[in-house]
Length: 362
Ligand SMILES: NC(=O)c1ccc[n+]([C@@H]2O[C@H](COP(=O)([O-])OP(=O)(O)OC[C@H]3O[C@@H](n4cnc5c(N)ncnc54)[C@H](OP(=O)(O)O)[C@@H]3O)[C@@H](O)[C@H]2O)c1
View: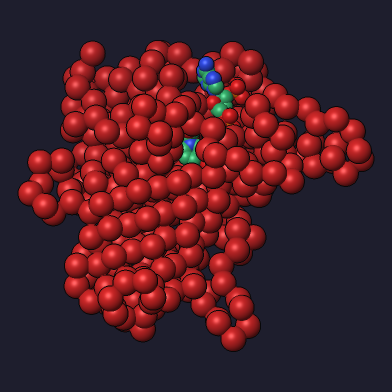
């Protein structure tokens, strides 16, 4: 097995002409993220030579239309990646662990949406607006694995990095309000079904989550660690340190981060409440000006009309929406701020971010 980001033995196989329209494979094409990949590739007119649609044996043989052509879904196997330059993976961590190296060894550059390789040394963990330089040295069609961060991490860092660059985040306290779509297509279907059942007075069907989801909320469903934090919460901590290049041996330079992640009965788009302590003073108006100019960020911040970002504002949109930017009155003047943000985690939290990574390589 090759090391994760190592170029494949078939490196250099693809010709320059082919890479102007790379051959693309989507692993997990039938899922929530996979379907969003297709929408975005079409919307952004991403140049594609040949396209392969991959999923489990359950979906093999199904037809999916893309840009006026009908494709047949194939079963994802180790042999799926011959001649593929770019492999977009969203088939779950187990499939990434099983097949991403085979894809890289076959010459495909893998952009992986799962958590399988995010914290692996040598695998870049990338938000294009935050750390685009992390992909330097990786060439499309020459193997290698790049990881897409966790959706909650991406949305948080889109809102906070412009402020961090200006005033250095000393401490960050984040609470999330996470949508059903973050748990995939089946969770969205379960929320819809339960909502109908509750309104009809019927008993609710619980298959994806062990709790009633409609008209309820609960601590994030990822496994709980010994320290009392669930995995989603610890991803937000560890991934931020990696993306901001704050390694564990840094002497005092690491931002202190704590997170509480909660699943709420929203169909699509996560929200996050974020409290920040800065090393240097940063006023409300400076923060607003920085966020107004930040790529991929939109401000909705109208105190008079009580108009701030909502998950519906963000659903189906590329930008992360930020508002409720206010001085934290519990901290000395200008070193503490609160804000609220919403982002479509299937889009910016997953498929869009991955395609933006691929665009860095074109
Ligand atoms: N949803 C989000 O907002 C989000 C955000 C960031 C990252 N992610 C990550 O992206 C991945 C997919 O998430 P999702 O929400 O799209 O899930 P999903 O809707 O449940 O879709 C899962 C996809 O993986 C495929 N798959 C499952 N088992 C497979 C197998 N044994 N072999 C090949 N393909 C298999 C499924 O194919 P079948 O239809 O054939 O079963 C389907 O295409 C996960 O790793 C998730 O953590 C999701």
